Image (cartoon, rainbow over all chains, first blue to last red; front, side, top):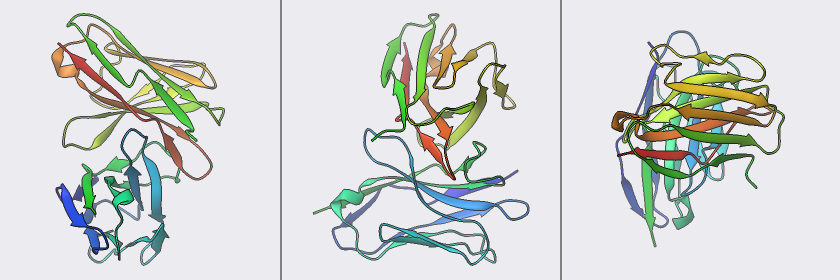
Length: 114
Length: 113
């Protein structure tokens, strides 16, 4: 069945460092791919998405490119801030963006130190 | 502000008791809501789809008699963990479909002693 694998955390970086959180997936067909972020004490929020191969999702300085050849959707940010400290979830879906049938990775905790 | 609100955020109960978790949609009228479960260091897993005015749809392997879902109005769905046992300890999260994305509650952590 479909699955999503993320790099294990926690990832600890200094402010202004470059961030990469790896995400690979296994799926039939052409799923949509998502990154969600969960800040402390809050619900998951959609960070960015890509719905077809070679699409690049971007938001708040974060980017991820849908790579079908490597079945990956790695999250990157050029310069992280302390406020980026959160848990990041990679996910896929075969339906529309608001379908509940999301397959999530296990989440990666990012800690950014000043 | 929050689009989805869950209550309680934390709950501790004794084994054998039942616990109710509420999920409220604050900005949308939701004919459908989703309930997820997350174990430590594991993925969120979809448990069931809550349908307003009708029975919930459960994912394979989820006991419908253990996890009772009621969606009595367009803004409220409840998940009741019946006769809770320590293995039911987990993080339960609900979500509401909005325009082009899902909106998630902040989650409810259940600890069964």
